[in-house]
Length: 79
Image 1 (cartoon, rainbow, N blue to C red):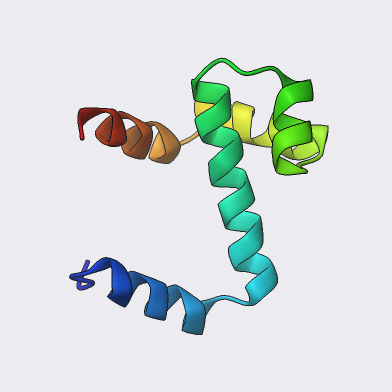
Image 2 (spheres, rainbow, N blue to C red):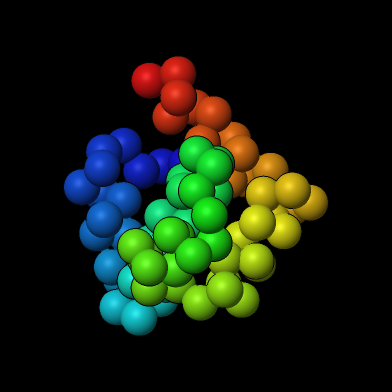
C-alpha cells in the first residue's frame, strides 16, 4: 500500500486497467453499495445498468466472499 493520495490511486488504476475494466469495477462497487443499503435488484439494475447476473455475483461476494466489499463499506460508514 504505497499509494498515498486519491490522485495516486487514480493514476495507478488508469495505468493498470483498461477503461472497460475501470467502468466494470465502478459498476460493481455501485451495486455493492446499493445492495448494502437494501435496494432491490430491479432498482439496482435500473440505476446502475448492471445485469441481474452481475448483481447476483456481487451479492454472493458480499455474503460469502473474502469480505473485501464489507471491509470498505463498513469503513465508509465510520467516515
